[in-house]
Every structure is written in structure tokens, then in C-alpha cells.
Length: 274
Image (tube, rainbow, N blue to C red; front, side, top):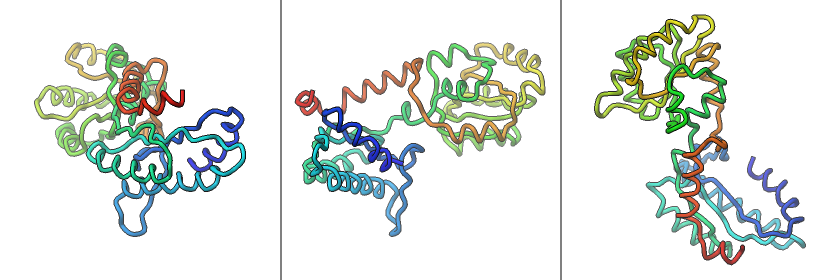
């Protein structure tokens, strides 16, 4: 809970005698963000922005006049929807200026940072990499959607097209027809992007036949394939609870974070503070 986090952090920061930056997420879909609800049928994003402003006003009311309270260097808002970036920025700047809080940064959403990638999925599940070690290291795709592949191969491809891009497929190790169909479909133009496939029940089925088929596909495989011992439902449940992280091996995420910082941070204010 962000309010609890604020309540716990303020006394700690007060002892440091350093300026405080208030950081809030504007993405109502983010798992790590507060869950915003609307009683008057407002869009979720409007509720998110109003909630952020309300919490900042509550912070100012509760702490700004308190002896020893840390000075607020500015406010950082992350996860702003790109298509509404100008609209949100205008609203936030106007409201924060009226509260006399400097705007440190207004950062749009980034798929690279907002979603777990296949490298994180592999570590989270402690999965065996059956194919695509180099793909995990070089360019791990984000996991925006998960699809449990229980349909026929033909129907699955159509279903994936309806779901969207950056899909992680979960299916049993016996369903190599799924792998073959998806590899074939991924070569076509205007098709969906598959981030990776997770094969379940590897210990139960034995991975030798699976490896023979994957090795036969060779360089045609455009995505990594992971294998786990447990069942399909368990995998889907664990992926649903995943929170995106930046690990020491997350080169793409670190580069993206550095790029966003350089592009959107208000350097005039940070130079004054630092």
C-alpha cells in the first residue's frame, strides 16, 4: 500500500536531512500500483491521476508544517499512458504548481519496464532452458499476455491473434504440435509476436523427445522454450503473480531506465537540489 509506504518512509527520511522526492505511478493496470475504483463511471486513468493528486495533497497537509519534516524536492509520476501523455502532463503541472511542488519528472509507460521479460520468467519459475539461451541473454521479450494452449493448433493461432503481441504460451510437453504451429505462424507477416513457450510436465514426460524436435527446428526457432516439472495451472498461477524487476543481468531494462531518466527528468531542478 503506497500510503502505508509513505507513512513509514517519511520518519526515516527526516533523519537524513535530505530533500524528499515523491514518486507515484499513474498506471492503473500496474500490479504494484494502487487499485483505483470509480463510483461515477470515470475512466480508470482519470481516477488514477486524481488519486495521485489527492495523496500528494494529503501528504502536504500531514507533513509540510510538521517540525523536522523533509523538504519536498519534487514529484515524479511514472507509467503515464503514451497516448495521453500531453493531456496528463498539462493537468499534473497545473495542479502540482498550485501545490507549490516542483515537477521532477513525468515519465510515460515503457513496455520494457512495465512487464516481466522471458529472462525474469525463467528465473521466477526456475525453469530449464530447452532452447534459446542466447535469446534470453540478448533480447528477452516482455510478457504482456499468457495463453494456456489447450486448443487445437489451428484455433490457437487464431486465438493468439485476438489476444495481441508479446504472448507467452503455456502447454504440456506432449503438445509439440503447438510448438511446430507457432513456429510456422511466426514466420508469416502481420502475425503475433510470441515471447516464448513454457512446456510443463517435463519430468513426467521426459525431455529427450522434446529436445530432439527442438534441435531439429534449429535456427527456425525465433523465441526461447522453457521447461518445468509442474503442471500447467501452477505455471499460469505463478506468472499471474509476477512483478517486473530490474536484475543485474537486465541490460535492456537498465538501458531503458537510463534513457527515460535522461529524456524526462527536469535537469534544472535536479541540478539545484544536488
